[in-house]
Length: 330
Image (tube, rainbow, N blue to C red; front, side):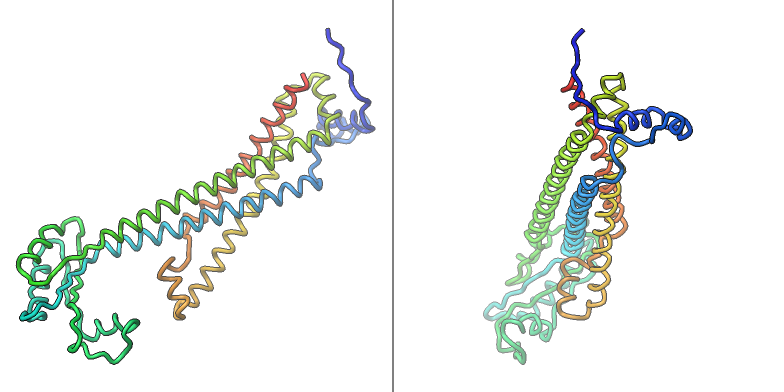
């Protein structure tokens, strides 16, 4: 049988070991021992790791919230776009453009799935051109096309190909814009945002795992004598790993919930202030892009799930690290 050489243990090691194996306070007092866990509940390294985990959880929840906001806004934009198409009637020499626009409106309104078709008034066209041409325009002097806004009650029931064909055949200078290119761009942007967000979440989780590994190794190094004595006197690896796992599980849950709470509070505050500034130009711009900047119950539930996931991941990582360390000293 191979001899195992042990370095002299520090004072108090056997008392702590006895406290681990004999959790009863009465038995611990009878033996003159003080019950103590393998890993100290409060330590500078533990507090530092909890802060790191809180920061990682905060960043992960921020990423999740941002992805949720962009995705919800993109879906809302797509829903608005697919429920509206535009008909443009360009001026043609010798042709009454207004009469052609009325004809195009009647054709569009007769199509199944169309709720209404309305030609914009001159003042509405002037309002659209005001940012580029200024105010006080006389629309009669400008050869601008007539625009017809077609509202769809059921986008799936409308045959846009047939509508475009009828307009090209029956209305001079008419063309149909169904905004498909914009919808495709929005879908591409939303998918790219989700992919980027998931990648950032993956990086945050990897950084958290590495932090836990280093912290577990540090905790084992500072308690190496206790771990070695326990291992040599016959303590099972599962028992030692369970002690570390319990310690880092609570540490991970505390840090994860702290970071998730910070992110949730930030989104709630931003939603409150942006909701109050809706009437301002800046607030209107933000509202047009992201709505009221509210992530909703799903977003807050996702933050809670991330916090719990980080806690579980921290516990599992520490347990596997302990098993590897014990295997290396066999």
